Amino acid sequence: MSPRVLVVDDDDAIREVAQMSLELVAGWQVVVASSGEEAVDICLADPPDAILLDVMMPTMDGPTTFARLQAHTRTRDVPVVLLTAKVQAAERRKWEQLGVAGVLAKPFDPLLLPGEVAELLGWTS
Image (cartoon, rainbow, N blue to C red; front, side, top):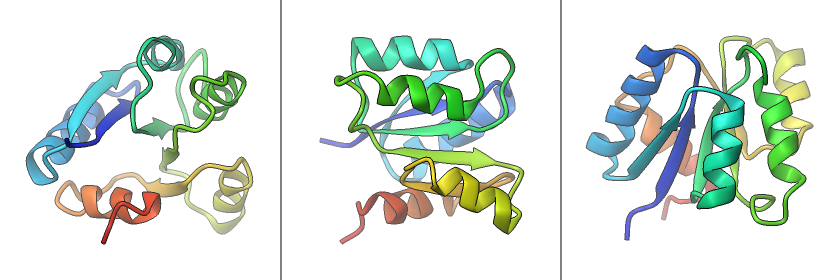
């Protein structure tokens, strides 16, 4: 069975491109959320195999969303890959210190995204 991935981003275009990339290139099942709150609700109801999470979102940003997911035993072990336009070394270290599975830069190449996510998650053979 193919992995189920939650894509969380407040930008409709990024969500759509990531969803099409992961579904068409990798054959994964993709669920989308436009906010941190929606992502937490989706994950608590039915945890995905992994989450692609935007760092900068209004109301609840990515790190706060990640902290909320870490606070629940049901979602604590779901690996999270952060998507961010802020990829300076200091910022990348800050995100990685949160305990996420990895950090990917936006904009991303839709043809390469599934492979990059799979590599960060150890899904490559």
